[in-house]
Length: 457
Image 1 (tube, rainbow, N blue to C red):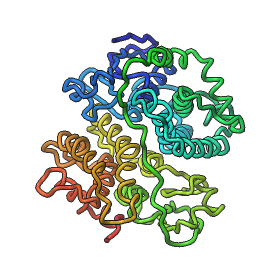
Image 2: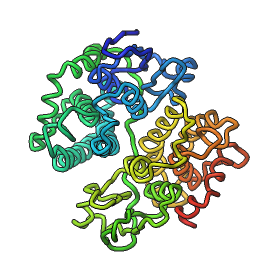
Image 3: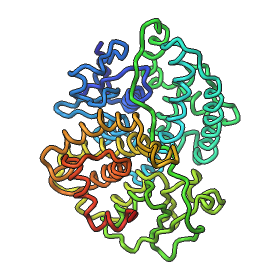
Image 4: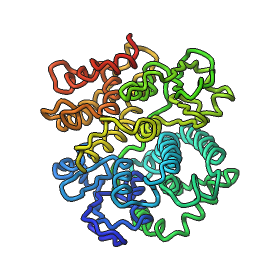
């Protein structure tokens, strides 16, 4: 069906969605809260609408959501959210307030890279398995996911909500929308957040009273009531898993006013280091850390996740790779060629799409294959190969076309996000000689900044 949702902004925008997908619902929730006008078009997953040629022409991953704005097609929920926020100047993602925006980015990306994945796994076992596949849930996994969710909600409750009832800041933001979306998904399985996590519980109670929450979730409640119909799959909530547990030196504080990056070669902190070198930050302090040091109080005071990348600039500590990259590009080096002045709306849209696709989805899937088994001979498995062959390679190949780089014939920030993901694919042996994607990767790998940042072996 199609449904016109009216708001204060006049937009010719269609959101292809399914209310059962939290990745699609978060976008609808955001548009309702931001009063952005969209046309909703249901993708019937049970009927296989998401695999039909006309939908794959919009979203080649065959998942929801997808956004069509005139001649522009976008997929990946985080990219869609950022695009809509910037285009409509949403107060939930205030691009004019860079400090608050940085905090929102940290909170949002943290939620997407921790709770989002766990809640997806829990939902599959507790809801999809019994209702769709008529299989009993795996109680061992249910227990495991329940314990993980509790720890992750405890972390959220402790390290955010510093100023008000909201995750960050004094007003509703994208981070709160993410929390509301994932808890509503868990509620379908009769999961309740432990009352000990009082700030999270109170936030969700508040969100449920808001018109935007009720409006965006009404289709979900109706769908659940009619769940005798078949349901299909949606965009995976899987995001980047924890960086590999690696070893090096003890923790030291930054010297002087220099920026300091806590790093381990080959992990996602390498993307940050590569970008820093591309921006000319050759004097950046690089501290190679040991895994055991990441759990020490002095490091946890910088990054309560206990992971890399972590960066310190003066008194400001940042974590989450995407947020750090944005900070370098927008606050540290403000004049550079990595955001070309010639970029059009389409170039910006492609940049945001690939940035979040790589960070939130692809990195995690490839990293889990790379570090998961612990045996080099078993690194390549059918899942990674299928993902590459069916989704990543065709999309990259199509978008690359005859261009030298993924966003045109100039090297840009987009290539940094894509390049690290291709580094993982190369390590896994997924790149094929003689293809445009292979040539593109080695065009990146031959850059001096790339060679300076990446491990030599």
